[in-house]
Structures are given as structure tokens and as C-alpha cells.
Amino acid sequence: MNKLLFGTAGTPHSAAPPHSTVEGIKRIAELGLDSLEIEFVMGVNIGETSARQIAQVALNRNIKLSVHAPYFINLNAHEPEKMKASQVRLIQAARAASLCGAGDVAFHPAFYLGDPLEKVYETVKKNLLEVRERLDKDGIKVRLRPELMGKASQFGALNEVLRLASEIPGVAPCIDFAHWHARTGVFNSYDEFATVLSQIKERLGAPALKEMHIHVAGIAYGKSGEKNHLDLRDSDFAYRELLQALKDFKAGGLVICESPNLEEDALLLKRAFVEMK
Image (cartoon, rainbow, N blue to C red; front, side):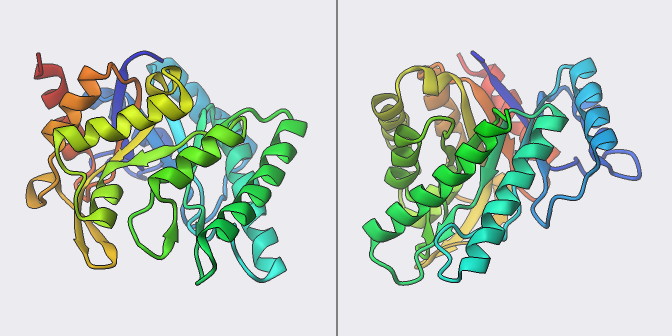
């Protein structure tokens, strides 16, 4: 992939009833957008027939798909049963993604739970490796993308997701620029966005910039980080500076809008990017 493809996190609000993923893909194409992230955030509940229909509709309309795994994943869970359930949910999301024709699975990886940072990293890495090995054994090649998270209590700082991606084949980062802004209180300027992109190139190689999975939204935040998403124009997020940095670095991949107004901000982002020189 060598260009940015803009889309929404879930079915656009303006899709025809019953607001299914299939109708969402059709509406994405009608709007002139390029991609859609299927939201399995409350659980993976899709049959093979429906999944293959989604894959065919997306293929016919040249819409690129990704998946967001359930929120109920914590690869640092202290209880063995919760850890196992987290791994199962991630595996289920990856299998569904493969059937739907999606190439990437974004997920919230873990919580620190008061543990030392290096211990948390090693625990997350071990449990993610087990998931990756199971998927590889089953021939499921979708990329697992631990997300750059927005709260101080969440595992998923920039260094952590880049380190996982550098150490585990088949793992790549989901870079949520709004989350990183909320978590740090900074990283909201051209130079700071460029610093993130430079780190990705240095840690993962230039090809990683051509196959990014990016989340963008307006965001409200406080001392502990992210509070909630906002429409871009209701927030302080410097989306134009981000788009300029992405263009200057010749980034490619998916730009998924998570603003509450979904397709409105996705179109805002695409139009602003296309108009940039």
C-alpha cells in the first residue's frame, strides 16, 4: 500500500438501514471514502456466510477493511481465566478479519495494574506471541496491531507498541495520534507528529510508513489522559499539521476516523489531505 486511504470506525451514520457492515461499505463507496474499520468492540459475533459477503462487497467496491477487536482484552490480566479469555477474543477477531478480507486487527493490549513497566511488557509480549503462533499455525496472516493508548493506566505508550512490533513478526502498531496527544498533553504540532513518524521509520523500517494503520479524532483529555472523543472542529487536535506530516513522509495505509460524526470528519480529513500541496 503506497497511499493513504480514509474511512470510518464502524458503519457511517448515513448508511441505509439496517446499518449493517455491508450497508456501511456501500455508503463508504458512495461518499468517496476508501476504507472501513469493522467494530467488533463488544464481541465477535459473525458467521462465515456473512463474513464472506462483507469481503465480496468490499472487493467489488475497492474498499479496504480492517477490524477492531473487543475492548475486553487485557494481556496483563492477573487471573489465568481472564488472560485466556483475552487471548481467545483476539484470536476470534483475527479469524473474523481473515474471513471478511481485512488485513489488520487493532486492539487495546493491556492495563498496567500497578505492575513494574518492564514486567508488564514481558507479560504482554509472551501472551501476544502465543496468540501470533496460534494464528500462524492456522494460516491466519492478518497483522495484529496493538494500539497507541490514551490513558496513563493503559499499556500502549509509543515505545511499547513499537517495541512489540520490532520483536514479534506479524505485529505492527496502530498509531492513534489523538490518544498520544491526550496521554502526553503535547504531540500536537507538525514537528511532534514528524518525530513519531521518524521513530516508526527508525524502529521498524521505511516500509512500515507505507502500511500504517492510523486512528484520528478530536479528543477531550485531562491529567490522566483521554476522556472522550470529539468532533475535530470541537477539539484542539491539530489535524492539518498531522496530515501535512503524513504527506511529507509519504505515508500510506488506513486513516480511520473515530470522531462522533464519523463520515463528516473522515471526509474533512480526506479533502484537506487531497488539497494539500
